[in-house]
Image (cartoon, rainbow, N blue to C red; front, side, top):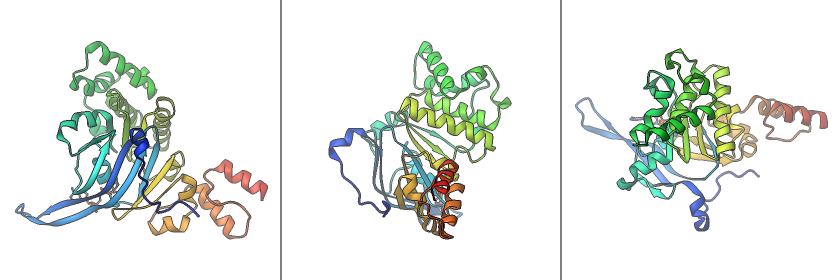
Length: 298
Ligand code: ADP
Ligand code: MG
């Protein structure tokens, strides 16, 4: 039924519309003993192939240690594949001449906003990356302004980052990436350290970037409720890509997800239990509204 283990599609015609092409990538960390001698290798990513089209919103799910961060770090040349190739916006990450073009195309946002703050006021912080790229002062001002507007932080442009809430800090970090005018933004558990309000703010900002600005978004998250907005979900387990499909396709496989130590959104779980106890409702329900409608129809 659901689209699991899809054979890899080769789409030469649409190649230009591809933002990310991860082709049979494996990555091994080199393990060293206390004297610095090579002690072995640890394969954190194992034969992963996946493609992301320009303008897609994709979510990567997987339990701790499944290789999500390792894979994400390949997308802007923080790591290089041990085997296979990673192509970003038509550029092979192994091509060292393309390093800065790739880093301009793909911005990264990490879990802890504290570690991503550099400036003493918000607008300095956002200006940091374009300054380093050598963008002209006038244009930097414009980019800072537009980036802060996109994440709804323009009213705080003169604030000290230390005075902001977690959700606000993370939105400033996102603005800092936006000021580079990336085509794609990769967010590695950006809401993990935030309270529910901060999570909502950050997810709203990320969705707007995708909807309004058509920026390709790759979101790694532990929160299933954040995954329901994705065009496509990829599930990793022990370094391998084990499931992929639309949120409805993936979340209708409750038992399979449990095997990978993953839960499903609350409404999906409830509908699954109701269905098991005999209620005639469809599988893969994603939110409260759909659940209420399905119960009313049953
Ligand atoms: P995830 O982001 O899904 O939690 P990671 O990509 O961080 O997973 O890690 C995948 C595996 O690689 C884990 O088993 C982790 O312990 C291991 N790992 C991560 N970073 C390193 C490193 N620098 N050296 C050795 N092993 C690592
Ligand atoms: Mg991680």
